[in-house]
Length: 187
Image 1 (tube, rainbow, N blue to C red):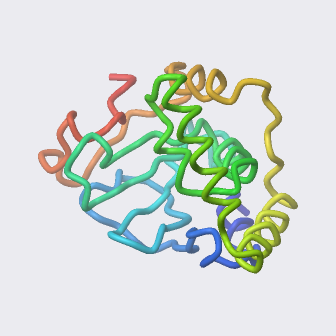
Image 2 (tube, rainbow, N blue to C red):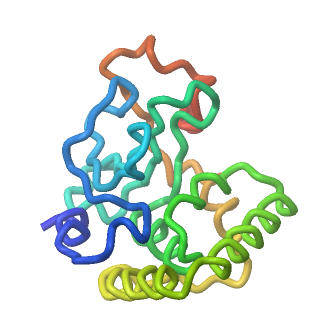
């Protein structure tokens, strides 16, 4: 059983987290061999794991956010060195869309975005916050939240380490240019 199978078997409120379980969503910009596990439910944005060095459980392979309708540098973003980090950081932040948006930011921008995310969470209706916390707690049973003193430093160092990336391949190479994301970091 892969870590994706475990994720798909968790009965959380997908709407409260904006994290829909998906396994069959491929676009030309989706890397070959990518194992899709979730979608934001809008514009085809999906999360996938790209197997690294024969990792059949997918527990030690990087997570990418693929945004097929985005024609800027955000079309393909490395999100975490593995699904545990992706889930752990997202669980800590109580937000499953922000992590890929933090990659490549300065420390000041990073902190500002975290503060905005916290304010937005606190402004939600109590019932909505309750649903998010309930769903986050269900995910914690499988994915432990990582405990780091400096989240910015941890994410920045993880992204900067070439060992945390894989070279992505595409069915139509011309459709994905280097300017369309951070995926060619290890090139």
